[in-house]
Length: 398
Image (cartoon, rainbow, N blue to C red; front, side, top):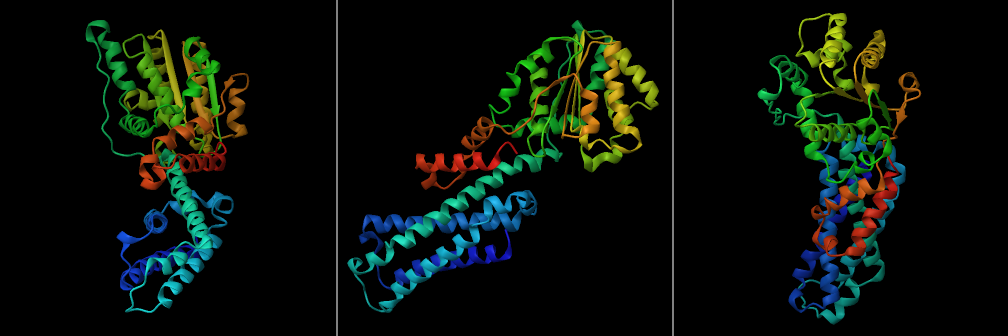
């Protein structure tokens, strides 16, 4: 939000405080106020709280401006006019209250009309709803912002039943699950997942075919911010749950991040499956083939191929190494990426699922966060539905 918007917010908060203070100075007893007047003053206080929340989001969150850069014209373009109109009406209300003069007690019959001006109420309600939608959009966009962050979270290792697996295979499974960074990011992603989201993909026929048939490749492209990393984590969790007790099934996964390209070469990613053993790339490829052949099936999930460094043939080397496993092993490969022709050519003829923020996923997320909104919103079913509908329309599968 631009500086004039911030100034407008501060101005309205100040006017609301002055209205409340002026009413007290005039000796108005709120216990005796008509119910419709009390209701309006409650809306004023609610507006002040919502505006304060918006102001905090702008000032305290450095990623806010970047998150809404691309949607400023469609979502926030009318906020400046709303701020200006609302402040003008509240200034007029404050003037009418003060016109009676301090030091004299005023009856509510005389002041009720000033508080219940239709123009003032409309301006307050319009601005209040827009700010609520704005703060909800901040929460929605945090899905995309947090997709590339790696937090220090607790990670858990899957217990291995030593009586059902050989010592060699147990060590191999330890190697595959030894990448602490990827485990931490996977745990963090799943902790932030809203229950029910991504179910549309798990229920799709393409995914069912990929998980049940042999030597399958599934490509999942999507536009920036569509939630590809979260979808990859949901798929990984599904595989972990489904094959938790099946020691004949192997699972390996990796999350690319453009901020860490210097440490995510093909050798680094492939070596993460082998506990970063000091091997050459050729040796690592051979070892992976030998390891994969020990399992009845191996699932490999790689997120954000577009963030793999394209220079130096890194992306080609990684994809060639994984796709060539089809020739000797029963490997099912799934990858997510932005729409990039140089990547999509590797998946010609493969199954494809477009990743997007579906209306049902967005609504699931909003339903889980409605408790964070002001109480007057939670009490109004029509207002909650209006907020959810407006956000769903604004997201448009981002």
